[in-house]
Image (tube, rainbow, N blue to C red; front, side, top):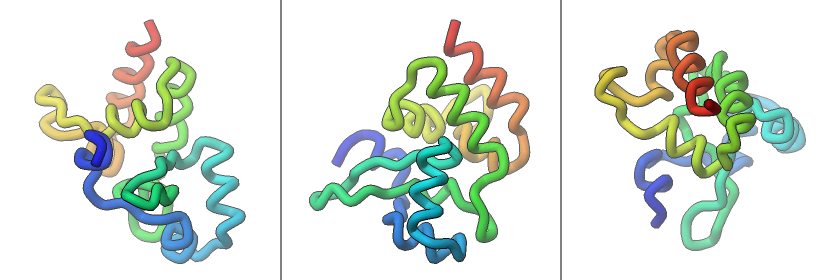
Length: 117
């Protein structure tokens, strides 16, 4: 198991994401293509999966897309950006993904943008 797999903990295979969002699997692939979500191949069978924390109340976390785009523009791979979002940060008193889920997107985006410099 990779470090990122361990950091995230709870993963959802793409069909489960589609079911939770009440959309088709094609729509989930579209969300991945437009960078609203990020996925990795995890586990022994290397099944493409999304961190469960990317979903909240039947929707994709609202501010996730912009944050993923900023990190990807800074040169982060999907594995690196997921790792960054799930790594605890003492100055945040938690993980960046938790701050996004709590609606603190400005603070997280500012930190993500600083990584590009």
